[in-house]
Image 1: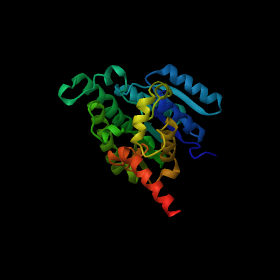
Image 2: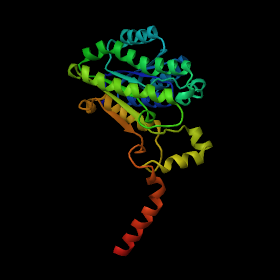
Image 3: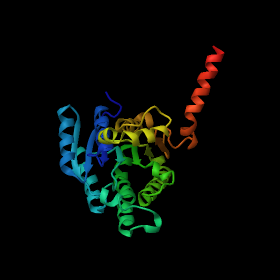
Image 4: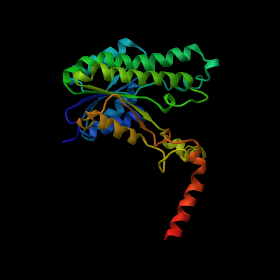
Length: 277
C-alpha cells in the first residue's frame, strides 16, 4: 500500500514537466490523480500511459484564467471520484508569448501583468476556494502550491511572474492559518532551476554557470519536486503547514560569493587535511 492509497489528487498544469512527474509519483504512491491542464490532448495521453502501467488517472480540462472552468474541474472531479483530499496548484501562465514580454517594472505591459495574476494568483485562489469544502470533509486535506525562487529574490526581468508568486506565498500562509484547525494543511514549494533534457543538452555552459551557485552537485529534476509534493500530500506531511519549502539545491541559502570562493576554500581544506594526515 502506498502513502497515498485511496487519496484523490488534482494536479493542475498536469501535462507539463513538473506536473507530469508529480502525477506519475502520486499514482505510484497509490493516489487517484486528476491530470488537469488547458491542453487536454497531452493530459489524456499521460493519463492513458499511467493507466496502462496500473495507475488510476483521468484527464480533465481546466483554464485557470476562467473561474467557471475551475469550478467545473472541481465538480467533475467529485462526480468521478466522489471525494478530494489533495490539490497541487502547479498550473501557471508560462507561455513564451507572455514571459518574453514580462520585463522590468518601468516597462510593464499591463496585459501581461493582468493575465499573469489572473492565472497564477487568482487561479490558485479559486482552486483553493472551490476545493475547500471537499478537503475539509475529507478530514485530512492537503493543498500544495507551486511558488518560485523568483518570489524570494530580485532579478532583472519576469517582474509580473515573480510578484504573482509572492502573492501565492502570502495566500499559502493565510489559508494554512484559516483552515488548519479544520484538518487542511497548506504549503508552497519553491523549486530551484529544473532544466529540461533539451536545455541540459543544448545549453551546457548556462547549466554549468547556474550549477556553480547551487549547494548540491547538480541541478534538480522534476522528480525531485514530485517527491516533496508526495510527502506533503501524505500522512507523513500532516504536521507541516504554512511553509514555503525551498526545493532548490540551496541556491537561495548562501551568499553569492560562495560560488566564486569555492575553489579557494576547497583547496585550503584539502591542504589542511594533507598536513594533518
